[in-house]
Length: 568
Image 1 (spheres, helix red, strand yellow):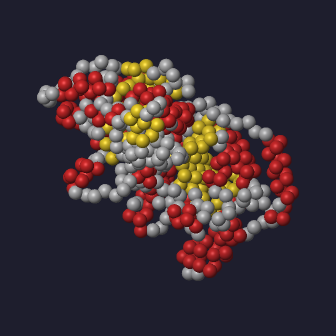
Image 2 (spheres, rainbow, N blue to C red):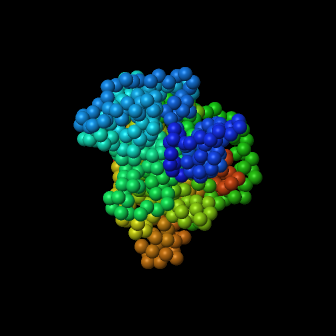
Image 3 (spheres, rainbow, N blue to C red):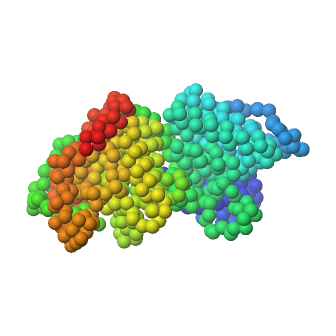
C-alpha cells in the first residue's frame, strides 16, 4: 500500500531489551539508534522509536492488541502435544523453557477476531519462541487455521517472523513448507483472501512457503526478509552484502511485495483489505448532475476559442505535452479512495505502470494506469511512460487478482509504446505483451480501457483488451508513432504530420472504424483547468458501464470481449 517507508532492520526482540529506571520513568535502548528512550512514549507509538523511527519487535499479545477489536480475539488449537520426530536430545526441555519464558503455547498463535467489526482469522509468529522457527506444531496450527477459515468463509492475515526451519525436527520441519502451502492453495481456490505482513526477521522456510503466498504481501519498515539470511550467505559463498540488502525497502524496489505498512496504519489497512476483496452489489456514488452540467457549460463558454477542430498532428503533439493530465490525475475525481500496490513479485516494481484498488461507492475496482511522469527526473525514472516487461507483469498480476475477487478493472492507457531497450529484450518484452493479450482476453470480470493520451503500438494494446475501449477527445491510438510510420513506408520521418492524417489515429477516426465505443469530451482540451470536470464526467460514465455488467455471468463477460476483438 502507498504508505510512508522508513526504518532499518531491528536487532533485538522486545523481551531482551535492557531497562533502566529513572525517578519516575522507565528507559529502554532503541534497537536501531541505540539511544535510551522513554518506554511509555514508545508504547504509545506502537513500539516505534520516537528518535529515529526504528521498529521494536513486539510480542504476540501486543501484536493482537494493535489490530483486533478489544476483547474479540478467540485463540484456537492451543495445548497441542510436543513433537520430537528425531528424538533430538533435550528438545522437549528447550520447548518447555520457551513456553515458560514467553507464556506462549508455541511460536505461532492463531485464532479469530474482529477488525473494526469485520471478522477475520489472524496468525502471529513470535520471535521469542525459538526464533519462531517452523516445526510440526507451527505448520499444523497454521494449516488447521486455514481449514477453519475455509469452513467459516473468513479472510486470513498472518504476521510472519521466523529464523526458518526448526532444525531439531529435521525433514519433518521441511515438510511443513509444502503442507502449509497446500492449505493456502485450497483457501485460494475457495476465493478467500490470504494476506501476509512480513516482520523482522522473516527468513528460511517460512519465507519460502506461507510468508510469500499472500494475495497481498506487506512488510513493516526496515524488516529483514530473505530466503537465505545474511549470515548463511556469507558463510556459504563468502559474498559481502550491500547496505539495505534484504530489507523491506529492498523488496519493494525489486517488486517482491505490494507495499510497506506502518504500524499506526496497520489496523486500517487490514480493514480496507477485507472490504476491498469481497464481492458486493454495485452501489455507486450519487452525482450532483446539475452542478456537473453547470461546470461543463461554464468551461465550454470560457474556452470556446479552444474548441476549433485540431488536426491529427496537432493532437499528436498535444498528447505528448508534459502538462496534459494522465490517468492517475483523474483517479482522485473518479474514486472515493485509492491505494497503490507494487511489484511483479519476481524482479522489480516498474513505476511507469501504477496499479491498485479504488472504491466507487461501496464497489471496489482494480485500477491500472500508465504514467509518464511530471518532471525530468520522473521522466527518466518512468522511461517516459514506456513500460518494461515487469510493468506488464505487474499489471497482469493485479488484473488476475481482480478476477479472483470479482472486481471490475479500469485501465488508463497512456504510453508511446513499450520500452525498446536491450534490458527489455533480455527480460522478455515480447512474451510479456503476448501473455497480457491472451490472459486479458480470458478475464471473467468487466474490463474498461480508456485512452487518456497517447496509445502507441502493442505497448498500449497490452493493457487495452477491454469489453469497451474509450478515448478522450484529443487522445491518439496508433500502430506506431507517425514518425516511425513515415520512416518505414516513405523512408522519411519528416513526413510525420502527413502520416498522422493517413493513419487514422484520432478518436473520431477510431469511433468510425468501430475500434472504440465512446469519445469522452475534453471541453476545450485536457489540462489543469479541465481535469476535474473530465474526471467527474468519467466517473459518471464508468458507473453506467459498471451498471451494465451488474448480474452478467463471468462466461458472458468473457464471451462478449472475445466477440468484440473477433469482429476485427
